[in-house]
Amino acid sequence: MENEQIKQIILRELPGMLRRDPEVREFILELSREHFADKAETESRFDRLLEEMRRERERSDRRWEEHLREFRAFQEEQARKWEEHLREFRAFQEEQARKWEEHLWEFRAFQEEQARKWEEHRAFQEEQARKWEENQRRWEENSAQIRGLIEALKAQARKHDQSIGALGARWGIQTEEAFRNALAGILGDLFGLEVTHVTEYDRSGEVFGRPEQVELDLIIKDGLLIIGEIKSSVSQGDVFLFERKARFYEKAHKVKADRWVMISPMVDRKARHMAEELGIEVYSYAEDAGRAVSWGGVVLSRRVMASPQGAGLLRGDSAGDGTAVN
Image (cartoon, rainbow, N blue to C red; front, side):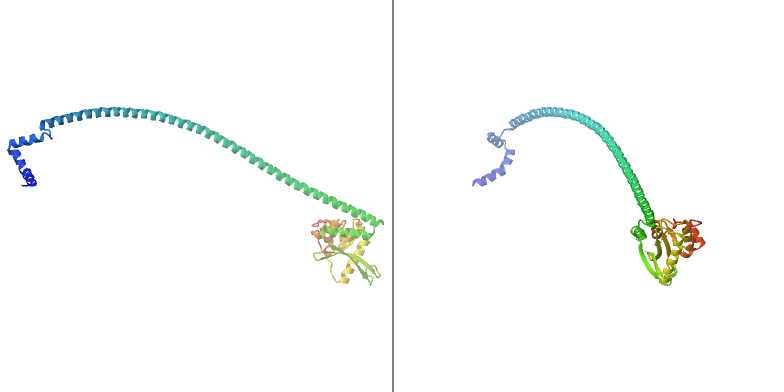
């Protein structure tokens, strides 16, 4: 029989033999004692193991309790430190809040101070601008007054020059032609009026009663034809003669002059009255005549000025202001 077969028979029959036969059971136990402990020894070993485990558990419990106490002490220490740090942090926060409020108040006060200074500076600038504008306005007004005064002085000087020139022409110091040219120059330079001296020949003698040359001044302005005469002095006869010269020119050239004007710094009272009746405008100075012609003045037709109402207007009566007569 082979070993494998014997092994199979033993494994099959041995459990039953151990239950039925005590000798077999004792024999098997005796064989196994060399390798395995019996029940008593096993229980003894188990008890020793349990005791060892109990003692180890007690040691573990003690160590755990010790660690737990240490951990709780650590927790309490950490809690104490945390409370301390929290108190310090809260105190720090309160200090920072106090400082912030203090700095904020100082900053607001600084802002208000800067705003006040800015308002003062802006008010100062506005005041300076107002004073500058006021000074500028006064300067312009003074400049205008000074310019007006200078122009008035110049005009007065020119009038004096014209009066002195008229005296000189009358007494032979300068010629009538030089005086006429000076006043014509004033009309041209100041008012842009074109003054033309014309000479006509009266063959039929309508002006002087015999054939003779007739001299007149023509003033042209914006299409207006003005027949004028510039003389150093004007008498009643000069006015009557100028009226005949003007009518002769209109008849000879078949035109109708818009105005008749005489300019002279020395006009006889009777001559002025005669000029009003004949519709002739009389001016003492070239500036007055230039303003009347250039800027409006009293502009009347010769038919109206020759009427009693027109003469009254030239004298300054009723609605007239006498601007054209000096």
